[in-house]
Structures are given as C-alpha cells and as structure tokens.
Amino acid sequence: MTKLIDKLAWIEIQDGKILSTLSKGKKLFYIPGGKREAGESDHEALIREIKEELSVDLHPESLRYLGTFEAQADGKDEGVLVRMTCYTGSYKGELQPDHEIEKIVWLDYLEKEKIAPVDKIIFDYLNFKGLL
Image (cartoon, rainbow, N blue to C red; front, side, top):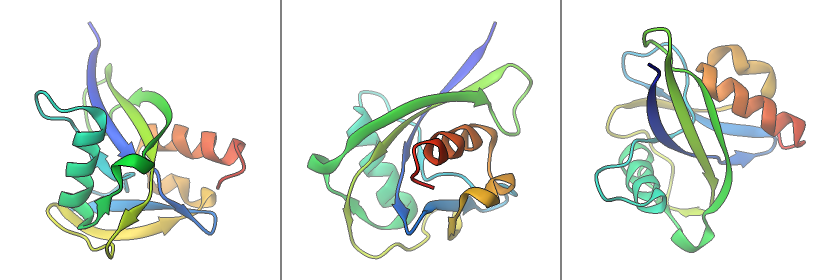
C-alpha cells in the first residue's frame, strides 16, 4: 500500500531562478510550503506556511494553480510518495528565514542536484515551460 504525503508549495521565480529553502538539519533544498491542517483550504494552508517559514504575506487573490507533482518522498521509506500541489502568487514583505528554515536561496535549473526528488520534477516542468 502506497502512503501519500499531501503538501502545498509556493513557486516564486525571479530572473530565471526559483526561491528555495533549507530546513534546519536537512541537506537538500525544498520549494517553500508545507502540509495543510484540518479544515484548511489550499490557499489558507499555503498562506499560513509561507508566513511561518518566510515571514511574508501572500496575496490571496493573486494565487494561481500551477500544477501537481508526485515523487518518492525524501528521507522516507520506499513507496512513500509526496504529492506537491503548486501555486504562484505575489507577496508583500521581506523574505526572511523563520521557524524551521535555516536559509533562503535562489536556485537555477543547473543546481537541481541540490533539491528533493519531487522538486526535481517541478524544476524539469518549469525548465520545459521556459521559466527556469
């Protein structure tokens, strides 16, 4: 039986690079986001997670669905998949690592060896679309 981890991610691209984060104690970078709490919509969960991780406020009306991607979950047993539902959207505030985030980086497509498996699929998609 396959176990599925349901997550949301915020895709922020500037100058051909994507915003990525390094969590404390981790080796790979991740696209920012997280899991929804009981009763939360995609938008509510993503807005909360990004505020907790990066100290910025996403503009709810600007959020646009980008795609959903699945891959083996990093650091989990074989067969544990992560499903990442991705949104783009504008924000206000200054990006600052907060909560469990150690640092924020902007990665280009050639740096995809530094990221988690599901993020590699997202990088490939964004590169194919000419965004990275």
